[in-house]
Image (cartoon, rainbow, N blue to C red; front, side):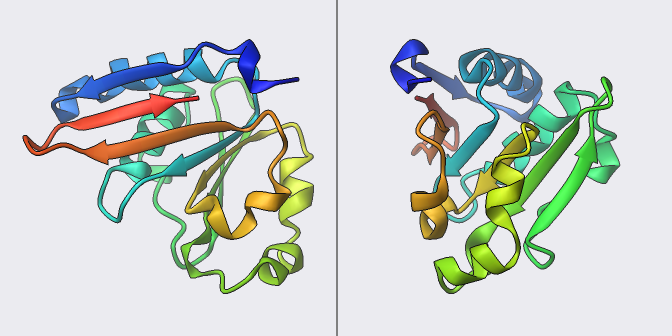
Length: 146
């Protein structure tokens, strides 16, 4: 599978009320890909968008949080499918990704939503969806999915 099979998406999120709608569009742009890498500066809204996506998939709203300290969280969607949420910010090197069994998660077929993926970029499948979030001067967020 090749990312060129998917149409890129750029949307603007102007308020928290627009998150559910944005999450729906992001999910459509991701398509059948199961590994999604989220890029953006600290505070750009990666965790917030992942929470909206998880909620859209039926994960309990209160159950989704940034796995900053645990590195990985596991949620269950309304269809019973597992959703993995990773925050790789605290990893020092790729060896730590290997040690936590990161490749097994990626190969599981479950949806893997990954914040700060750069440390493990070489482990990501070729068809990984990449979501870029940028805070704009007016406080809105520009979200690009490729």
